[in-house]
Amino acid sequence: HFENILQLILNLKHNQTNIQDLPSNFLSSNTFSTVVQNQIPLDIPSLPFLPSVSILLRCSDVLSHHGTSPYGFVNWHNYLSLIPRNSSHVYIHSEPLNYKGSEQSAHFCNNLTQELVFFISRHFRKSVIAVRRGFALDGLVQLSLANLTICSPSTFCLFPALYQQHSVAFQLSSLIANGNASVTFTSTWKWIEYPPLQQFGEYDLSTSNAFNDVMTLLTSPHPATVPNNLTYLHPDGTLIQISGTRTIYLLDQRKLRPFQSKDAFLKRGFSFESVVNMQYPQWPVGDPLY
Image 1 (cartoon, rainbow, N blue to C red):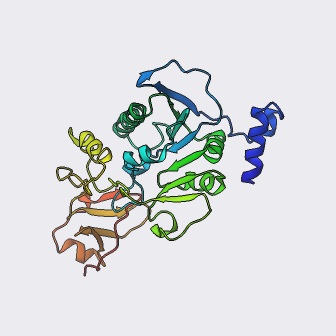
Image 2 (cartoon, rainbow, N blue to C red; image 1 turned 90 degrees about the horizontal axis):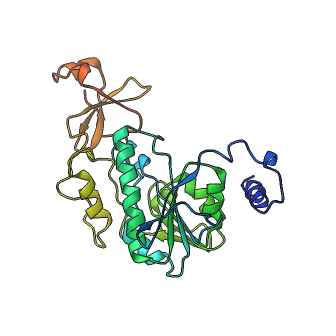
Image 3 (cartoon, rainbow, N blue to C red; image 1 turned 45 degrees about the vertical axis):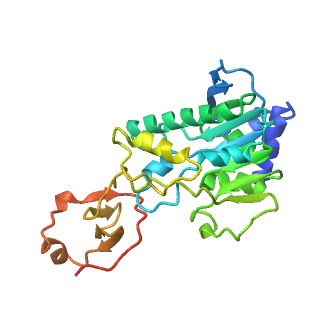
């Protein structure tokens, strides 16, 4: 099915088929929002359909999954070592800014994407760096057929990476293959292992200095695991309930400890009004509380 979609889209680009033959979600909102060359913003020109390099950058997943999430950012020095010097066009694919989360996270993700554009442009002055936002299927084709595809942890990028006939670099994460670097899916597959995945699901990125702290981490060739001045978004002692369930947990030493009864909850002096409802907590489950 995926190969059929690829062929339909390629035929359309070469005027060999009609738009009616394509799935209805092919032409969803997936547009270029930024184009830069030699650190100079350009009016959005006519760009080639297939870039030299396709990069998938998922930001909102990093911010919306709390705890020891498998989502995170690729350290930016990996881009410098992976992108060929003669790359003419580099497309950064990312989700719409209103995809998940709040206006604050959208602002954070927009700023981070812009910083990445200029970071790459500083080192590849002849390359055109462009940002595409959205989930249109032609974005999947660009990820599948570029000369090089670089994926942050994402199932959206997994299928293009598996199809990739040229070269793919995929950030090692527990999201795919349980983080086992000995697993190689294709002959073109390369795991990005160091610098390791930069994870922020545990941390409060709403503080005034958080963005600068994240940038320091992402742009360091030998980063610490987390800058010391980032604080936990949900510190130990937080009461958590997973959406759609009744069990309440106490976050204790970065583990979720389930209360086994209402009495176990109340006798510790807790209040139901203090419980935080969460959809995707990623902390491991610890010992129960009686």
